[in-house]
Each structure stands twice: as C-alpha cells, then as structure tokens.
Length: 300
Image: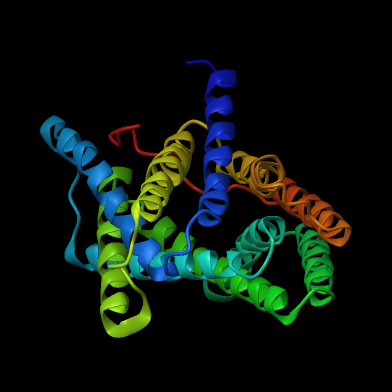
C-alpha cells in the first residue's frame, strides 16, 4: 500500500468518526445505555482480532499495573462517550464536534504541568486562537437557549475526559500492543457503563431495534473503522499528521448533518468552527512529535 492509499484510509477513518453524531440523532435511548451497547458490540467485534493475535503469538504480555491503567482508561472513555451523547441532545453537531476536538489543547496543558512537556510560543498562540473560536461558538449557542450552552459545556467536559484517556493510553501503549490495549479498554468501558446503568444512571432494557442498530453502527463504523484505523495509521504516519487529519471531523460532521438531517449550522458556529480549525491546524504545525516509533513486533 502506497502513501496516498494509507492517507486516504486515515481520512476515511475521520469520516467514520463523524458518523457517531449522526447516529445519535436517530435514537432516543439513554446516553449511558448507548455507551454500554456501543462498547459491548465493540468487545464482540474485537474478540476475533484478539483470538487471531493470540494464535499468531503477537498479542503480547502485560503486567498487572498496566492492566489497571488500561481499566482506568476504559472508565474514562465510557464517561467521555456519555458527555458526547448528552451534548448532542442539546447542541448542534457542528458545535459538539468542534468543541470535542479541543481535547488536543487540554492534552498539551496536562502534559506541560505534569510531565514538563514544553510547546513553542507559536503553538501557545494557536491555543489562544482556538480558545477564541470556542468562545464564538459558545456565544452563538447562548443566543439560542440555555440548553444549547449546556450542551457546549458537556462537550468541553468530554474533550477534557478524552485528553486524559489519550494521555494514559500514550503512557501504557509504549509496552502494550494495540489489540490488547483496546480490548481491555473496551471491556472496562462496558463494565463501567453497566454499573452506572444498574445504579439508575441509564436504561439498557428499553431499547428498540433502531436503538440497537445505532449502537452497533457506532461500534462498527466509529470504533472499528474510526479509532482502530487511527491506531493502525499511526504506525506509518506521524501522530501530528493523524491529528491534522482528525481536525476534519467537525467538517465531516457538519456536512453529514446538512446532507442527512438538513441541519444548517448557524453563521456564528461556522465562523467559530473556522477559527478553531485554523488554530488547531497551526498548533499541529508548530508542535514537535516526541513519540517513539512503534515497535516492529506490534501487529499493524
């Protein structure tokens, strides 16, 4: 497979991630219930890959401490999905996806404070530009209703949760294969969602056929064909390239929302989205990639 073909697959993965926002519009099921079934279906769909890796002897080993971190990642991922789904009940697809993607800046801040990872002045400037775009989006939704603003807040919380999930994953993935890491994370997320639902935080019983199909679609399109392709692509492309391509998710989401749902983004949302994307692209350009190359022993 040549470079162009690989990059087209990564672009395709971004499109698949944006499908989640569309599928959410077709279901009225509880947010945590959707998280439960999405992750349960993801575990089921991932199991053949785990068995295949086990048969090939490429599954890898993992110590108990790292299993704990993988389980923690799963808990955080489940909570991230919950805020993502809840946000979409109140705000527009464009607002949700743009604000969720600000997780890259939370990641930069946490890495600087906790691990001393510095960024350039130009990259810092890009963060302020992106924050300004997020403010424009929030102001737009304030002009609509309190519910829309609450949806924006949930999206930002989801971005913070995803950044924590990414940081933990980055630390654990140095010695854990992609297949093993994602499998443990998906199991943990499934258990987390089930416990919360059992405690009254969601409903997993009153699902109709459409709800099940939406949850399965999220697992297949968004988890396997989205995040899994990203995990595959980072072996061949730099994480910075992956991040830049990922910035197209709000664009794809808004486009799908317009084509499928007829949801026209407000002018201020479009303006804010443009500013956010500009800031995120600039940030990616001026941020050095400090990650090591993937181990040759890890399966693609």
